[in-house]
Amino acid sequence: MNEKLCLYMPPFSSLESYYEMVDIASEYGLKHLEPLNYFEFETPDKDFAVKLKEYADKKGVGFPCFSVFINLVGEDSDNNIETVKKYADIAKILGCTMLHHTIANEFDDSSKVLPYENELFPKGIGAAREIFDYCKNLGIKTVFEGQGYLFNGCQRYKRLLEEINREVGILVDFGNIYLVGETADDFINLVKGRATHVHIKDVILTDEKGFMGHRTLKGRYLHEVDIGQGIAEVKSGVEKLKRQGYSGLYSLEYTAPTDDKDKFKEILNYVNSIV
Image 1: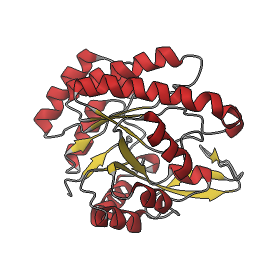
Image 2: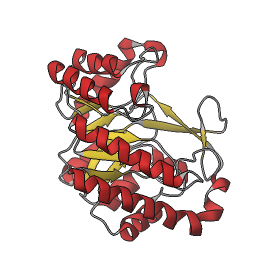
Image 3: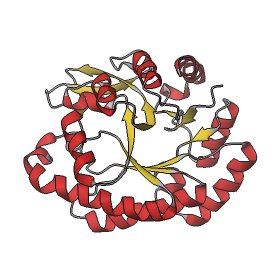
């Protein structure tokens, strides 16, 4: 298996532990696992991090990045900033070189954030800057993807990079940008060889919300699908990233339906063939 592949989302719904995630990564020949604030890490647990690192080391699985799904522009912003710092401490224990965190994680109703952009955007920038400085002292680089409505799309992401005034890492996510009516190709063109990390997933747009659909700015609904079966330019995007000089990891953001191991293996082989 390609050593550039990284397991990100739990591939099977029956999984209940990061020990199982390490086992799955090892079973499928993956050398990297990107944890997030899920399973035993729903709260920052340093003792568990030490135990998990020991377990993963024995399995030959490393942790390049830790992801935190959190809201830094709401009423609990100050507390959540401190929580992300605690996850940065966890990332340090795990040996991560990167920390990825969201800033404004509203995905279902743009009216909750965009009318307040002039207030929320600088608040989010301030939070991200404070976390960057904390992580830098730990030897960890914070990386940002386009996410939600407020920090998504080429124009807003470019503004993030300009206003944060820090050497942050750029995370290319293949699906999130469709939430605001742009494409993965648009974002890859924007970063022009500066990508630090990559999340691979695929999406479609429909007129029905269905299960876990996210409302786009154009009124349709964004859904994740099997990688290679949606509208995200996954294959051509990976090729373009390589031409731009990207040599980092590709985190697989995919959960197989109903613990379908054959489907997961199929997706894994497809992504392996293009990275």
